[in-house]
Amino acid sequence: MAAACSSASIVEYFGGEDGYRCGYCKNETGNLSYGMWAHSMTVQDYQDLIDRGWRRSGKYVYKPIMNQTCCPQYTIRCQALHFQTSKSHKKVLKKMLKFISKGDVSKAGGGEEPMDAHIEDVVACDFAYKSESHVAQSELNPLSQWITQSMDHTEKVENEDEDPGETKEEVNAPEVDSSSPQISAAEGTAVPGGPSHSAKVGHAPPKPGKGADLSKPPCRKAKDIRKERKLQKLLQNQMCKAEGSQLQAGDQLSLLQNSKSKANQPKTIEDFIFASLPEDAQHKLEVRVVRSSPPSSQFKATFQESYQVYKRYQMVVHKDPPDKPTINQFTRFLCDSPLEAENAPDGPECGYGSFHQQYWLDGKIIAVGVIDVLPYCVSSVYLYYDPDYAFLSLGVYSALREIAFTRQLHEKAPELCFYYMGFYIHSCPKMRYKGQYRPSDLLCPETYIWTPIEQCLPLLERSKYCRFNQDVKAVDEGGVQELGRVRVLHKRTVMPYSVYKRRRKGPSDEASVQQYASLVGQACSERMLLFRS
Image 1: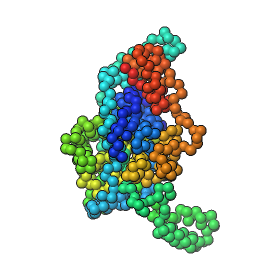
Image 2 (image 1 turned 90 degrees about the horizontal axis):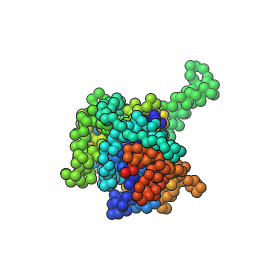
Image 3 (image 1 turned 135 degrees about the horizontal axis):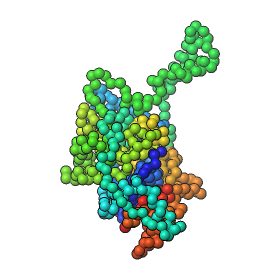
């Protein structure tokens, strides 16, 4: 878990937004969600929020109204440590390896992978800024600095219920220090593991009669089984001849277990991406992780090149007009992040927060993944790439690299072991590909318990909205218990809602605060600061 953070999350809650156009079924007003603007957010708070069905687009954080929206979006996570590559995944990895080694890849196969796998993020980009905050930065920027230094003093206000005579602690904020220390990996260091993208994770949905049955475990090749049997028989025949003396039964078993050829074990992602290349390899592929918020020097140095890749991607893949993918849109959607950069002794070397993972081929950027590194997971946000390299199935390839990256970070941060792929939309067939990254779980929209996807699929076949937790008595364990303990930021002063409620002038806002607290949960409602004007 991330080290205790000295700053606090500051959010403005907007409530249930009006219906927006759905990118899946094209319903003009069917996309319904709750939303809030995050001026700042700790990685632990965001981790807890995505474990309750929230997701960010830039600084806008939204949660689909699952039982009302036209296409329910279920949070999906892959168990990265237990991930097994499928036949189609290996095909993509081999294709990249062949391209790097020999420069020989048929471009005809590029169309097999979906190019529009980030629909939900594109939709999010469309509505995210309609509810943008209009609070003056002077009310918020200094506050986060003040919280870092003086959070303990807010106890004076929070204890006002017991002693109404307590004085409030006003904010006296120093200037914001723009020279935040950067993580070492953010300065262009090549990262062995991975990039990012959220919806850009899968391959095309199988045609009728083809493709894997997601309700069944992956099958083993008959060829692999035959090889293993042959190896076992060979070892059994040879074990008794070792050093001219007969081995004991226990020694035979030990030798058999330790002598299995690695070549006959299922290949991991790492076996492919770290494979030795010939000296005369035709291409060089490098993955670099750069901190995007606050921007590292390497991020700033490559900003324009990265933006040009994004612009081409939007124009070719999403058919945007030349004037639409502006630098401002790019910055707000894919560079701005509310997440505070954090480092912990037991955390990953790159630290926690928001990053861009850049794919460099022969000295130029061909793809960029946007990810958040959180206490328990790598959360994929978006992927964009140079359309000229679509034949490399960069959506699938980047997802596999992200899983490998998660596993790499786990070595230093043991609790970080999941790969979050955004939302799984079963009612939209072209979005079901995420379920092919196994093993994976879906989040129950009512009790926020993770459920293996194999158990969810039969339910989703019967109804697009489902409660996955089959225990009818189970409830949301993290739900709000005490509304008065919700933390509020009012006139640059931190106080519990019970105090703010007594001082508030005008109509009651209790219904809105109750809704907010029930959606973010008790823990987050007591840590995050809910801005009240």
